[in-house]
Length: 243
Image (tube, rainbow, N blue to C red):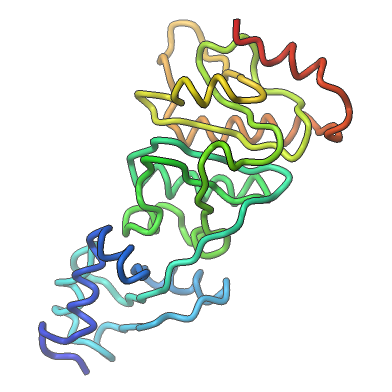
């Protein structure tokens, strides 16, 4: 049983609180029985698995845990990324909050068959906060990494200034969202195949949390049906009124 704070595994866990070390070592942590069980169901083998009271003194595990006291189990895993694909997927650009990134990964896992693709300036999906917010979906559907120009299919950019709501678009389709304050950059909006908005109640908030916008947008695209990609571009042009 680990009884020294200088144990190498504990030193590694401390390092993995920092994004730079997660990227350098290509590792991340998952804490708690639910996440460790989700990893096991998805076929992920831990590099290290520490059970409180069996493999490590409980106070030592609490000391390195991002959750604080009461951590029952902590695993160290090697990072994985998905490839691009799917009939319906999601792209994030400039989403800085790791909790939002993790929640969007969970939402996309529930509503579409493709991964969440992370573009520039997004929070680390393997940070402890993002992993917790994903509720295990980070293991079942790891994110992808790509720039906007690498996306295939119909790129649907959510923009509050767009004229039309989400609707029926040719598949495969990628719903594109930006950060809550900045939104998508102008070059992404200019090159999107479709721009669309989520109609909000007059007198209500001016914007939605990015995770809420992802859920509504994916649901709309999923339930509006899909045309084959050769079905013609006229409806697409009408929808993509960029003025």
